[in-house]
Image (cartoon, rainbow, N blue to C red; front, side):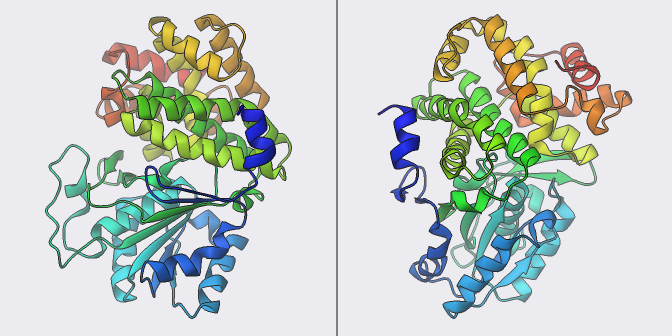
Length: 396
C-alpha cells in the first residue's frame, strides 16, 4: 500500500499499535481518556502543559472528560517553551501536595519534557540532575516508583511522546541537558489529529520541520539500527506528502493525521541519536528561549551542507523516501531550501533575535551536548564556530 492510499483510506481510522509503547491513534481518541485512566488504576492525575497551551480548548476538554467520569485532576501550566529546572522543582512539589497518582502530558514538546521531568522527581528526593543522560541511572526503590505517565501531543513535531527522555535547561549553566531513567516510559500515548487542527500556520510549519529533522538526523547517525532507520524513512515519506498540505490547509484532517504519525516515527528514529542541528539548537534555545522547531529549521541547511557531502548513499535513500527524482546531494540541499522557503522559515537566527556575539559561547556549549557526539562527521571548535556563525548570519 503506498502512502497516497494510506492517507486516503487508513489515516482516518482508529488504530492501536504496541511499538515502542501502546499507541492509540485516530481522530477523537482523546474521548477515551477516562477509560484509559481507569484501566491503569489512575484516579487523580496531574495534567501538565506549557504556558502557551493553558487556555486552549483541548485543556478544558480533557478536564471535562475526566470530571464526567468522576475522576479528580489538577493542572500545572508553568512550563516554558524550553523547560527549566526551577519549573520542574515547582511542578514536582505541586504533584506531591495534590496527592496525585499519575501525570498526563498534553501539548507540545515542552509539555512532554516538563511532564517527564516532573515524573522523574515527583516520588523521590533524588536531585533532578542526577538523572542526566551520561550519569549512571539512579537507583529507584520499589516503594517509590515513577508516576504513571500518559502523553497526548497536540503538535506534529516533537516525537517525544513514546520515550522517557526530556530536555531541560540548567538555569545555573545556561545549557540544556538530556535527563532520563530506564524505568520511566509512558504507559500509553494518544495520537489524536483533531487536537492539531487549531495549530497556527507558523507552529504547523515549525513543528512539522522539527519532525522532518528528527528523521533526517536520526537516519544519518552512524550505526546499524534498522528499526530506527525504517521509522525515519517512513516518517520522511509522510512528511514529503503532507507537510505543505497541513500548512496550507489547516483543517485537512488527513494531512494532520499523517504528520502526527510522521512526528511519532521521527521520535522513534532519533532514539539512535541526533546531530549538530540539535546540538546547536539546544544551546540557542537554552540561552535565548527560542522555539525549538523553528531554531532547528533555520540551522538545518548549514549542517546539511557540512554533513551531506560525506553521506551520499544515505542522501540517496532519504531523497527516494521524499519522492525526489534527483537523488544527488546537491539536488537534495536545493530541494530542502525550497521546502523551507515554501513553509516560510526565516533564513537566519539573526531574524529571531540571536546575536552574533554568542558564536563562541554557543559553539563551546554545543560540543558538550549529547547530540554532538552522534553527528556523522566530527566537528572541531573551529568548525562549530563557522556553523553557528553561518546560522546566525545567513543559513541559506
